[in-house]
Image: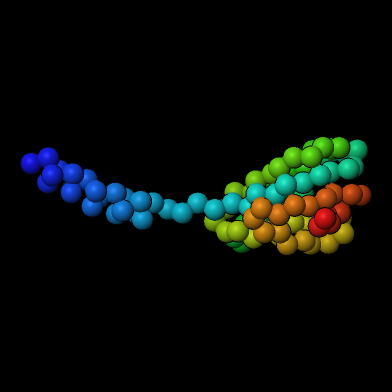
Length: 97
């Protein structure tokens, strides 16, 4: 009886795990050398979002969505970032180290 219950439980685990929705986001590590924080518009999954980069700090920001790529609008134009990207912000512009 215990073996039958164990087999049922083990066969249900992959079904439940594979049925769960996969979550995604774009995680950005940043260094902002500007004396002001920047709130920038982001396009991801066809939706508009915002991301905040605090002033004179090194930190991280997460943009929630179902993809692994986001486009950030800066004072210097649009920049495409992927998950786990490292960026530098100077004069309101994003650069890659």
